[in-house]
Image 1 (cartoon, rainbow, N blue to C red):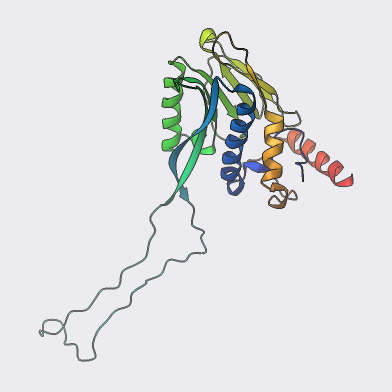
Image 2 (cartoon, helix red, strand yellow; image 1 turned 45 degrees about the vertical axis):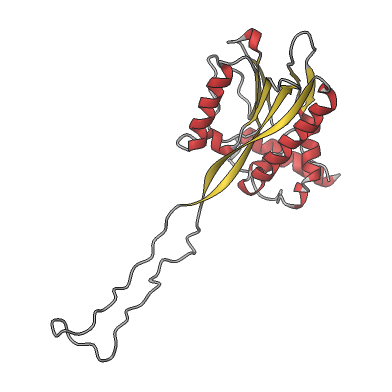
Amino acid sequence: MPSPFPGMDPYIEHSEVWSDFHGGLADEIRAQLNRVIQPRYVARMTPRVTYEVVEIGESHSVRPDVGVWQPATASQPGSGGVAVMSAPVESLVAMELPLRIYTVEVHETGTLRLVTAIEILSPVNKRPGHEAHDEYLRKRRELLRSGAHVIEIDLLRGGRRPPLERPVPSAPYYVTLSRVSRRPYVDVWPVQLQEKLPTIPVPLLEPDPDAPLDLAAVVAAVYERGAYARLIDYRQSPPPPLSDAEAAWLDEHLRSCKAR
């Protein structure tokens, strides 16, 4: 079943959906590129592992797990009797689970020279204070100092966006392209909630022309392959909260889709 949205589905940002979608997105981008960039180039998925704290619900009560043990013949303190085991109290430590984040890299075959890095942002990349946020900013600086082109795909409304030196039109989603020959200038595609995702150019080595990457087709394929229509409850509001204008458009759009 296809997504009811013309562009990015805001419900996919839900924490229980995004991680799976992120991996599918990287896989589909790799597949789409490999259909058009061979034989001189190959697209590869490169994983990085970070850790995400799992929230434990308040329904998990804190209670002693071990009782006091004392034999019936225990002597009173000071009379040389056996010791009494003190009962501990139960608390919590942060529980972290590994989270795999993918970059799609275009390499020149033979030399395996990195030509273009395609970064697909995840919530942890946009969360100040999380180790993955700092790691991503360091990696971003290294890439922008290198001889590789850099594409950033940000299909998340929440979190802090990677910095740009000049303001761009406000939008929930952004795609940026930094070509080696044009730095520090970057091309930016601001994408509104109701808009179709763009087809963007993926730069290769001179004199080869750019490879087209149809993000709308990528997202549509991942949505159907992942059966997200069966996982998402469109009766709820998507995370994070929408603006009043976005909420009004979303409500009207979903009503019109239901009426079809």
